[in-house]
Image (cartoon, rainbow, N blue to C red; front, side):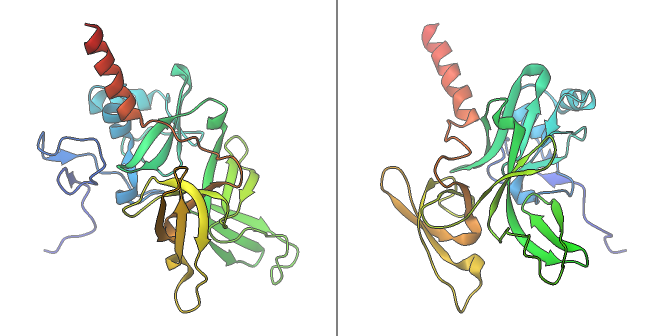
Length: 266
């Protein structure tokens, strides 16, 4: 009898390389459920609580913390330990006064600590637009959609959002507070490829005619003057003047530095 549907199990060896797990410690690891992010672009909540933040020692302890409603993702309480969190998601633990944002780095996706004020908004990139009978549906990179109702669906002049625009969305009410264009001169971060995590100014965007716009070449220049090239699909604009996310030391590195300081004192 043939296999029906996909498997609910995941071995550690084929898991994404940036997951902070030991590959030979045990054969299995938590497989994230289908959700807003794909397997290769997410972290399951168990890994976030146990292996990244260290607030839980085992998966069972992580489940207990989640079941009590102490963890929020983008303002929504999540109780499933296999729920996937991905790029620019905001993880909040109000009881512990801890707030984090998932950002790209040279290792992959990591958590960076943010303030309570920064945790009040999330960033989402416009991936597609679809005309409907009542308006325009905006598809975002985190799996959510926005329906903008217009007076004339055949001529939606009210909709000014374009593909690859970044929307700064208030988590409390879901309203768009700011729109960031993906254009030359703006600050952006690379979210994929060999230059993942590089943050700098967009110097040049190739004008495409005979290929898809997502494959257009983009040149990024960092603060040290080093330039690198990637495709537009890997570009995530974070500001026109001041970045919405601050470049910070990765959480895993902060933990290692703290341990080294303690050993030095002893």
